[in-house]
Image (tube, rainbow, N blue to C red; front, side, top):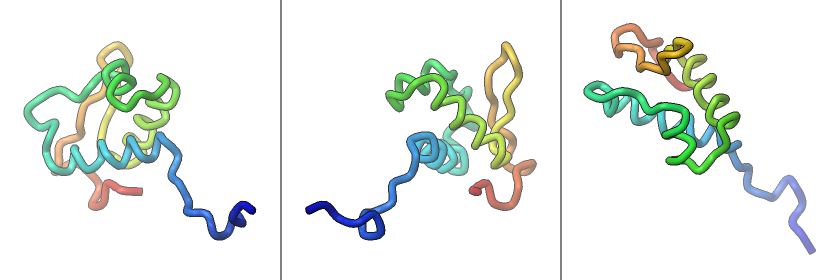
Length: 88
């Protein structure tokens, strides 16, 4: 007999897991001295489809942690310009 849905642990969607990992790395300053990874690099690292990574990046933008420019990729927003809490 399977567990009822109420008793099953709740899992985060893959894009949220990747966004949480990247948020933590940004907050720790990992990308202060090096460029933020490209979509292709993130697809390889997290073993996710490009559309999933795009949703991850969208969430990071909503959190105020990165900006994205067409043809230039994404860049980390400087710490002093980020919202008080980058998580959301």
